[in-house]
Image (cartoon, rainbow, N blue to C red; front, side, top):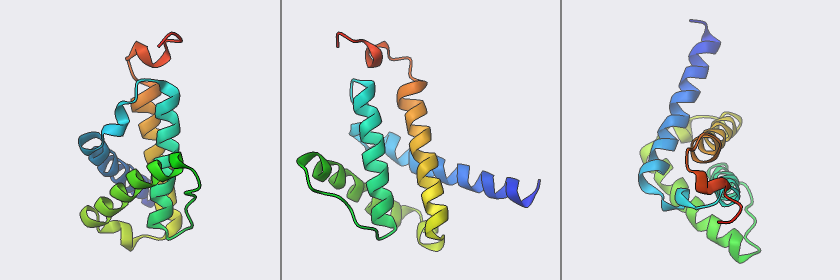
Length: 122
């Protein structure tokens, strides 16, 4: 295994650690429509990444503030449970968070067998 392969495996493992927490502890993953899930995944993961990277966060609307609360919960718990978050650089953390969003989108939307997600009458 090359060094690149090892680093890729570490990133995948870290994505799975973050994902596992969401799947076990976060109710927001159960929205009933695909577009709700897509929007929540984007906003919550991005805001969590911004918190973890000490970047400015948009909280102009009620919806932004709702996502921010969920992101704060994730960021606080991630920092407590995963010490590697504070040990890696921001670029690597952003890659991991992007991988988390892609994995969430696959599991909760694209790969889901829940037909209600794409039902236009629901």
